[in-house]
Length: 530
Image (cartoon, rainbow, N blue to C red; front, side, top):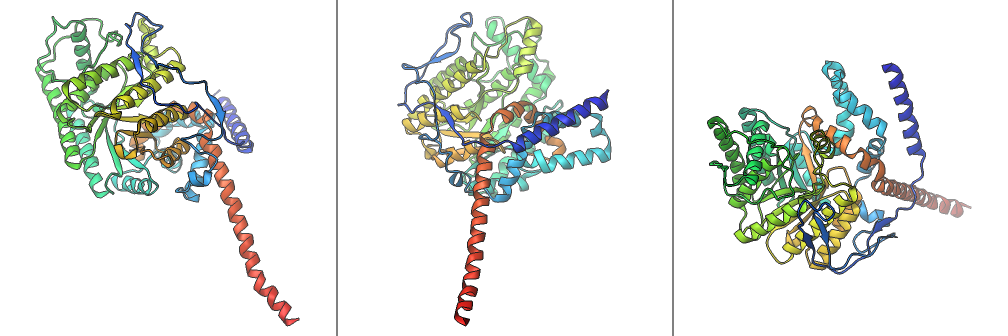
């Protein structure tokens, strides 16, 4: 049975890959909204009971419908020479090959199956698989195995007009010893920026799940949820000053009964985790490199926000935030929480920094909610998520245009990038303001990345790094989360193929010219002899 399945899969892979290689690459068009003047964005923070209006962003005037155009005021995808001017021929060939391979879903399915199978328990086979991974997906999506290799990647990005966000590939931890080791790795990552060109690293990414045991994060999240719903009867003596973590529309179904207080040992472990984050932030202040804290699923996100915002209260001063939190726009309460956090920060005189993403736990979040018989915390449609993301971006841009704070727009969505870039341009938010940074994963959305760079915006690439075996969970998530994106979003592949054809034509043409030039003197000599 297994052999039959694998045989069918192999035929499917070959057929799909052959069709992809043989398919033509048509002239690229871009669907984008017409340019418009900057409009102040407001948010409707209606109660969660009103499901039709919850977290819907509105503008005084709705933007006109989209139209299909070949160029616009932000991107110029017709000029592939200018777009990929900083990419070598070898890099372009490898990128095109890897993206075409990653877009074949049966290949991705087989790869993820192999990485999770017993094959990885057999020494020789494991080495072979890791070798293949290293020279394909790892090479394309990972910045390096250590800080030295990653530094070389940062230098190449810097030379091409981009910056790096250093993300050491650490996963969830369960004990204090591992947390201590991980905290030291984060500190070394921050320190490594001092040997790189100034400003070539925009942020260092920190995962709270790597410096605080996951079980403790769940306990803290439960207690924070219970305190929000029962403020008069709940006392959290260990709680530090922070910014809003919940709104009424936030999901509370994870905590159905009153949790017990933290034990003395748990409070001690919480203090250790907090001190690890303090040590990381102290080093980031010393090196003048902001940190951005990643988000996780809703079961532990309150604990992560608690760490993030308590650190923000300690370290964010003046106009520029040094600690950024993450807002996941696919959550129904995202917009309302963002606004409440910004308002609270303004009252405290703090610059607040947000990284805006769509979110990566849609399947698991919806499955858990369904098993409990409660409403999913995820927006009901992808269009609602897009609307929330674009609305959040517009709101923060309005807020930081003439005030403190910063925004990282982490996206691979071309329309979102176009809308935000146009709004930022209308508001006068440029690269030098340090208020806006576009970001995308290393190895993805290259056309958008270079297009935003050419348009004069600050652009960073998310740079995960670490040994191949350690980074495998990251690669598995990238494969599962992005195979649909890679299959349907073929802009990079189209433009890379177009540029490769242009370069080959230019190379062949140059070769013919050189050959002709070589024959001219010989022909002249023959004429003279005659």
